Image (tube, rainbow, N blue to C red; front, side, top):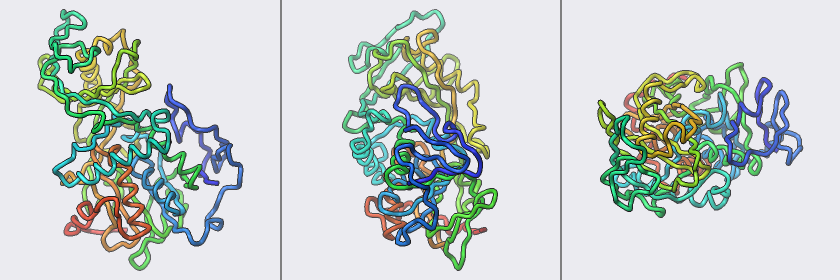
Length: 431
């Protein structure tokens, strides 16, 4: 039986935040040191109970990349401990849009990763009942130009007669173009996808989840031997995977090798009074606000009746605590203006504002994720820097890292182009 443990008492809300209109996780028994699924009341496993033949891997980071990595490692037979300092999917992995695209990264270094991951999302949905548990569905994607109308403009003043535009998009639009079909674009609810995958990893494959802050890695003779958490807890390991997202730069050892910055992105979640009128069309807008510059927000209806709107991003310093991240009021207000300009169903009085939020996307200097073993440090792997494509590329990243850790080579995708070794010239390792 797997254990979700902490040095202090936990509430279930601190690990998985409930989301209305979707199924919840199994009931859990909460104690001061562990959370155990009611479906199995066997004793928690400690290090002595782990089969000696299993490779011990500690994955640091409870976002989409860390959870996918833990899932595939455990599925392949590793004894996995996932360390998360706050709550699972509490940052970008819980507040992102969850948009998936097969071919939107074509022509660049991320193309093979994106294509493999899009297909892996489809197969995971079949395996894990994605449509019901985390809102997986194919959808059509449109590019549309929207111009904000004045306050005297009538509701539902649709200016384009193009049948490409769904009926609920009744604002002043023009230039609609189909940029993705149900064969090439899809979506998930990112927080529910992450926690469904982790729940499966815990119940089925024995992953242990520890709530604690990573302090340092202990390295002996050039090989990682253990992870030290704040408060002094030591977790012995054969390998460590650091999937710290925008907090990569807060970990001195990695910050001395390469830069991962945080791009702060804002979003709102609306609940229309008539969700049945909203069809599965993702909208990529060229939005022209009154008295302002054009911008490129995005609108994603979800199968549970929500409508997610995002945009308004800027590079900012990443706070130490993900719970401290709040949206800029002006950015949130602009996203509300986007919503009411797109559809009368999304205007004040017709839709309830369920969430106003912001998160940080992890970005690298060259725009390419960093995935691979750290040079000069055997058994230490990193997986970060996926920017706005983290939800899309999480599964293939996790599967590839699992292969790399356990078998020495990834076959699902060639990871050489993502290697942290490309930054080796700037290396100043401090452990």
